[in-house]
Image 1 (cartoon, rainbow, N blue to C red):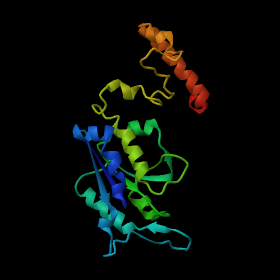
Image 2 (cartoon, one colour; image 1 turned 90 degrees about the vertical axis):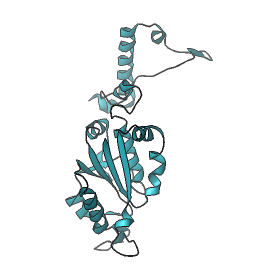
Image 3 (spheres, helix red, strand yellow; image 1 turned 30 degrees about the vertical axis):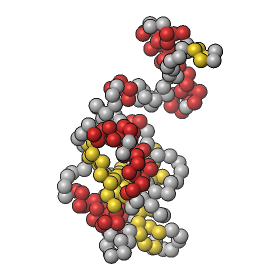
Image 4 (cartoon, rainbow, N blue to C red; image 1 turned 135 degrees about the vertical axis):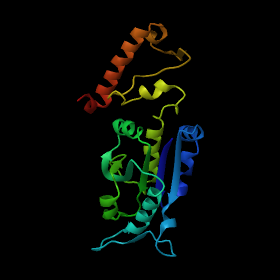
Length: 225
């Protein structure tokens, strides 16, 4: 079973994503366990403070090192982790290759930042990998953590009902997926391509491959490099 531990200052924000759909199904099958830990439970004072003013001045509060260190070290007493991941806009942009790699791990921790950021010493001494989900800034790392968890967990064998569906996703072969259709074969004059109704599997696969190349060239020519 894969173990994912997420450290957050607003853990309730993650209840929805992990209580439905694929992630819930994976948990119910015993394929993954996701625990969300409230950083304030590891605060150093009775006020449950997890942030403070930054040295050198400037606007914005910075998340302190003590609560993160206490939480991480408490978790490490229970098990060894393959990765400690920090979700941050200046990390490496998440792609399918990274998700594939992480799906082979047994356990990892995800740190969710807030405010101006987290004390750099957390990143220097605890974090093993920094990941971004895009060139934009969110209010916190929770939604990014949910995106990462979803992209990884769905790749675990047995999570999806059709094992081949994850393997045929966009980006798995470096290209975008071909167009897909379902019933009815005709709707308001719009018809499904004849090749998909032919039953000729080799020709269908050839068509899908060609369409995948065309779609990638049109929409993501950078991937063709």
